[in-house]
Image 1: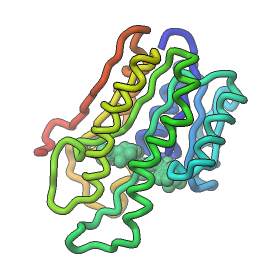
Image 2: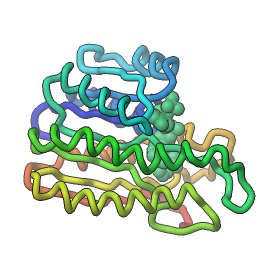
Image 3: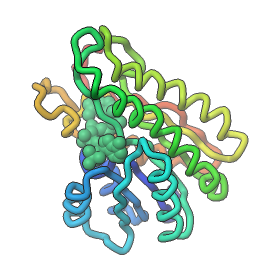
Image 4: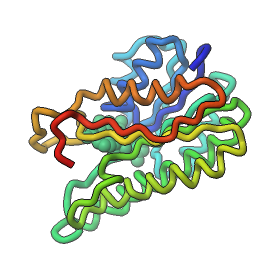
Length: 231
Ligand SMILES: NC(=O)c1ccc[n+]([C@@H]2O[C@H](COP(=O)([O-])OP(=O)(O)OC[C@H]3O[C@@H](n4cnc5c(N)ncnc54)[C@H](OP(=O)(O)O)[C@@H]3O)[C@@H](O)[C@H]2O)c1
């Protein structure tokens, strides 16, 4: 980004979102972050610094009024919105064949409805700013694995990124899909991660690279796998 910008990142109290927020703050930008858990949000804010350029908001990305309010409060605090990053997401980790369906609605609503809600709330502001929307997809949205509903939510994001691009490009807005490969974050809590898993930093750098594109450049897809990832 040329000049300092205002960026709203959903689900940025840990992992990829938190690393992206810290990189942007270190580079002089203004950042609003959301998360559902107030304690985790407070811990992130307390450990991050730059309170003059950082806004924390408790908001569920799957909830329309919370998303609308998060965008409105970001614009009220910083005066504009230059970029929105739909990052909030999680994986229940089970299979459609042998899992617990009670957790699936929240995952689908967060991972699929959430980015659509953020786009709806943010697009008028991004149009005013000539800004950019970034969606965090996944390699799981490019490849299939057996009976994997999480993967299906990310395939939905692959589609959403392109259909939003078709809408946004005539409004002067860029749309970037960033597909992380296996990344060592709390996303994998309780699972045994292979040693090749990426640290969050390279994925956060990819988001910043997308946000750094000059006016008129629409960088559409970035896939960031660790060397060694077999899928
Ligand atoms: N780690 C990987 O290997 C990997 C690979 C490909 C794609 N991804 C994608 O990358 C994104 C970030 O994941 P991560 O690895 O950084 O995971 P993470 O460390 O678990 O971070 C997820 C963040 O999202 C927040 N969150 C979850 N559900 C939310 C909701 N409904 N509303 C608002 N905030 C919510 C969490 O905070 P609260 O729980 O407090 O709300 C947390 O701040 C996700 O979309 C994930 O699918 C991750």
